[in-house]
Image (cartoon, one colour):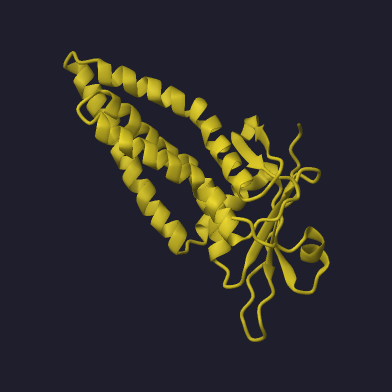
Length: 231
């Protein structure tokens, strides 16, 4: 996964790269939404997948409730427990998987954090530059790993109430991945190579692209407004 990427100095001051975006970490949701609104094949494909997961999740919960009215309460208790697990432990697992992926791409130090008031959680490697391929691996790692584990669990426990657990984890986790897909879509909306790094000190992420050749159309620069919220 290692590859020679430009340095931060080259990205910021070199003639070969231009700034695409510099969202502040506590405003990352606004930035993600702006990327999702742009659409693109990656976002559209994920939205179809997410719609299927939401419908499947609603079906599983409805089925558990119906069984409970019939006197079979185990599926409902499994479902309630799974929802609690997803909004607590699964969030941590999701970010840890990002952290492992970051390490595998060559970053030495991984930092975890959260903005609890905005329900934002993250894993980052301070001032470490990632290219498109590396960021793709990092962004998709939780989606792929959790998907594989839950599918195997569904197959093994298909005739057992635990099937509700694995199915709901798979469905709810798809919601967690929307932000990852939104950020990843930026890399695939550009024809030229895109690079990114986080700044712990500035509490920002930077996105640069290699400059287009003459005659190619440039995209728009995106910069979120400064936050005026009181801590």
